[in-house]
Image (cartoon, rainbow, N blue to C red):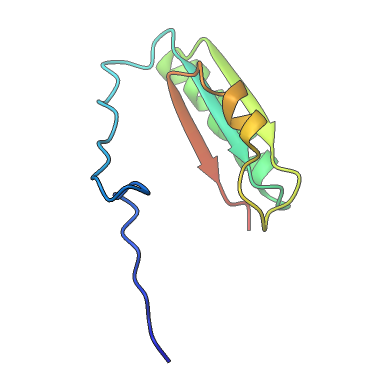
Length: 93
């Protein structure tokens, strides 16, 4: 059996991807939240959204739920979150 290790920092063309620079502040930011469709994720994001709004001044949370936990995020959903300043993804197990 061969074990193949993939480097997530590499694009399909072999060039290294760069992380986005950190936000100076979350105050007034729009945060996208991708729910993986498992049982506890919605409740987790309820708590996280309250904290982001009350303690960090986040203006808006765009919440989207994947149709199925076993599949990648649909492209259309990613496009909807494209205007967010930051995006969170969570597992609710």
